[in-house]
Length: 240
Image (tube, rainbow, N blue to C red; front, side, top):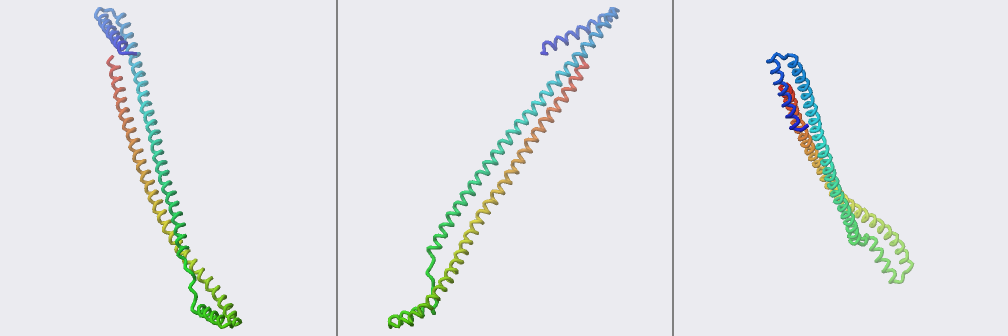
């Protein structure tokens, strides 16, 4: 119902009220009673219509607030989910790049260790045997030279094995130290990622709380406005 129709009803109620008063003054009580009942019926009907209209409008307004909030909440989650996914993807790329650098660095480190590997340093006893062997061979004392060579060969094989084991252990230690350093770097990066993830979670929670508070404020404000409207409708209904 538009304003023109509402104005027409108010005018008609005023006409009925004036008619009732005129009938009362003229002693036409039967007609006055009819006007009175008609006025009360129309007044009650109009009050009920206004309450129903207001109620429907208020429900529509509240649903509008709920729908707007749900849309904002969905957009909020979509945006923050994307932020979180971008964050994870970015740092996963950092981790992957760091692991690749570490692997390349390990290969280069191993290559340099192998290049720096020295020949075995034999004991003075073994070196002395080789000198004796060479002296005997020059003296054409091949039998004794062979005996010394055999003994020196066994000693050289043993010392070479010991030397290789020692150098291998040294290489393993250096390699392990290199790997430990790289693990520390990776662990430090992962800690930064974890701290950043927690900070992002806090920011998201804070933003969500603000969103929910805005929704609560709007809803409460609308509820207060609608309550005042209901009070006004009841008063205006009584005043019709």
